[in-house]
Length: 283
Image (cartoon, rainbow, N blue to C red; front, side, top):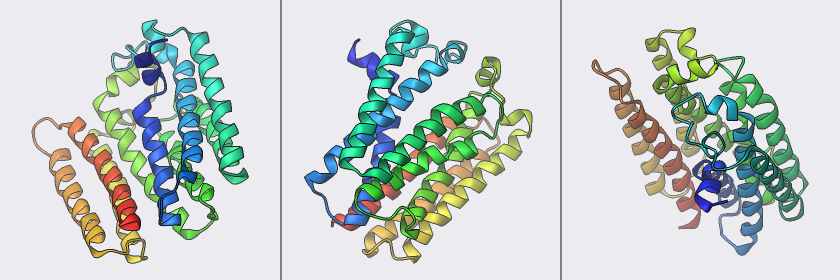
């Protein structure tokens, strides 16, 4: 299988972002970097890659009905379904084994739960409900706890939960922006969409509300002492101002809304907040 097709199958940017959130939690807990981090992060990356590949296997019949996903490796015929399934299971087992050996039992159990929740519950539930992303957002928050635990922390530490909460809140607007942009494709593929239950204006308000929740958590990180350097704390405050001014302007403009631009802005906000936390601990 060509590397390009494998990277598409595992949705490498998404799997890398998941690993980055775990990496951030590790650095926040340890306040340093060492070679010890490599194998736990490798386990998380491979596990996330396997989960994404298994998800594409599970949703192959839906993907081929949507223009946005019809070019993915399985519906396009670049990778056969059986090959994709075998590769996904191999990566999941490899990732779990690495976590068990190098990250510890709590991280292993969290990874196992995430596979069940993402590939078992969420993949099924989003065919039933437009609100599936709310419980499904747990799958994006748990890698933070996996990284925290792998670094030696307690997953019930309020600091770990706060970091996970930031990722949890951020995911709703992330997904619903895609739903607004590609709603007709999702509907044609057989997925329930939020715009069938609410007007577009109401969905926009919901997106702003969830972004506001993520923003509040990022500011609370400052107030609760996560940031030790004034410059990185100030950067996060500036990021919040930029996020809200840009997203509000784009969402409620009178002409056509540029959903992709908002989507990219929201993603950059998350990555830069996490990056600021890393810089704050390592500088």
